[in-house]
Image (cartoon, rainbow, N blue to C red; front, top):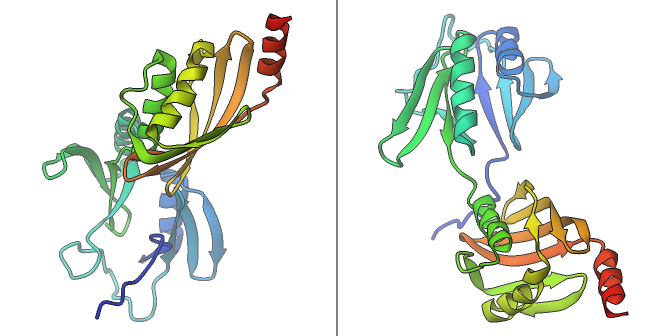
Length: 248
C-alpha cells in the first residue's frame, strides 16, 4: 500500500563542499544569495523561499573530491526564473564573473531557456525559465479590467468575488455580473507588484477611477491555472463620497 506522503514541497536542500569559506564566497558574494544562518561547519542561504545548506568537508570526504552529475544521487539544482530579461542578465553576469557556465540554452524537452553553471566544487546549477502560472492568471484578470473585457480570464467554475462594497458572490456568471457592474468606473489599472505563496497571490496596484486613484491590495487564489478567488481590499470612502456627491 502506498505511503501517500503529503508535503508542501522541498523544505531545504543540503550540499557538501570541500572548502566552506570558498563556497560561502561564491554563493554569498558572487551569486548574491542572502546567508541566513552560520554555524561551525555549515552555512544556510535562501534561494527564493528555499533554504540551501552548505556543509564543509568531513573526515570521510575524499581529498580533492569534486561533484559528478553522472553518479547516482544529485544531478543538478534548478532555480526558477520568471523573466526572460533576468535570465539574460544573469547569464551575462556569470560570464563577467568568470563562473563556469553554458551560456543561454534551450531545453528541447520543455522548450524553455536556461543557463547552467557550476560552483567551486563543480556542483551543477541551472537558472531555468519557469513562468509563475498563478501570476500570469492574475495578470490576465487585471488586463481584463483594463480592457473592460473579461473573456480571456480563466475563471474556475466556483470562483468567488467579494469586495468592501458588495457581498460575496459565487460562480462564473455571478462574478462576471458583479465585475461588469464596476467596469464603467475603471479608467485604468496601474502596474501590479505580486507576492505568491502556494495557490495564493497578493497583488498591489492602483485603480484609476472617476473618484481618484485608489490603492488596492487584492488577494487571489489560483487553482490548477484557474482563478478561484478574488478578494480586493481598499478604502471605499472615495467611491461612496463621490457617488453621494453625484446624486446630490
